[in-house]
Length: 131
Image (cartoon, rainbow, N blue to C red; front, top):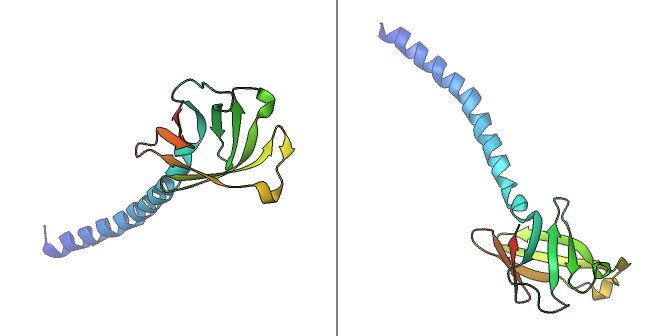
């Protein structure tokens, strides 16, 4: 095989690889950027059974960045609002309780810490595990 033919084949192969590998790598990066959001989405329950009516029986985080908390004391005391995830810090802001709007001046964000493996979360001293 001549060197000239070999070089042309190598150039053609390299150009083809660039056409396919670069877009594939870009898609992979885009897909991985969204992984953190999915990490939180789902239902979380207290690690220990609630021993107080003030402890949530479950927290559900939805992909549309909303959440709902069901309380041990009553299903009608559910809390709902919005959430945000940055690194391992989850910020939740309650907007409604028992279906009634919380006044804007009373809407205080709470911060939860997500474990490194993304399977546990602690908020106000209560640990939750993802179902």
